[in-house]
Amino acid sequence: MGWFGKKKRDRDDAGETLRRYNEAEAARLTALTNPADAAAAESTVPVTLDTGSGAGEFRVEDVFTITGRGIVATGTVLSGTMRVDQDVEILRGGAPVAASRVTGIEMFRKKATEVGAGTNAGILLRGRPAVERGDVIRASSPSA
Image 1 (cartoon, rainbow, N blue to C red):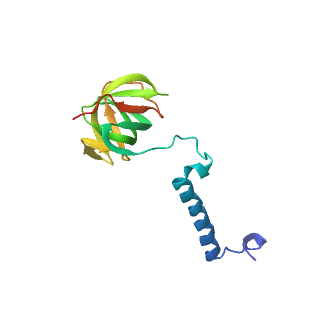
Image 2: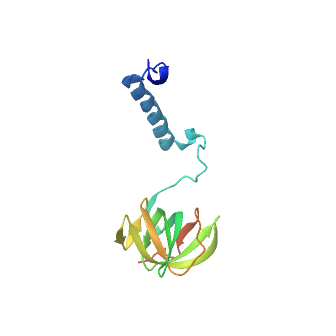
Image 3: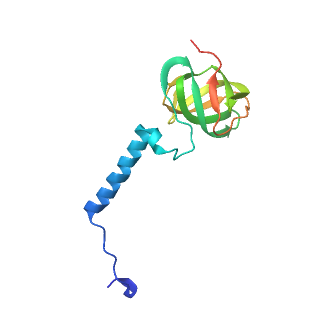
């Protein structure tokens, strides 16, 4: 008998726990490699990574204000490259809502001058542009 006079539950066999984990992991990997089979489990837009050198696009996941510096948008570079001192426009629903300039880039507490596709980063924007979660920051023109 267990504590308080209750019957102890049988512990799962380690092999059974591993089998359930492997099934869940296989389903997760199938959904990642074949999004059509995922049946739109999430309402997010699929991310297509383009490592070309064209104009960069950055999907905003969160926004912070740093006093004396400006607005920091954190997220992932979807395509191209984002660079410091690059003019950008903020798109919401495909329509431009604001324009700004990248004044700094950080990745995991390391400063960078540019970030490529697939990279998580924080982008410091000049001024106080209206940026929200889900917006896309696009380079106005490719920077050389």
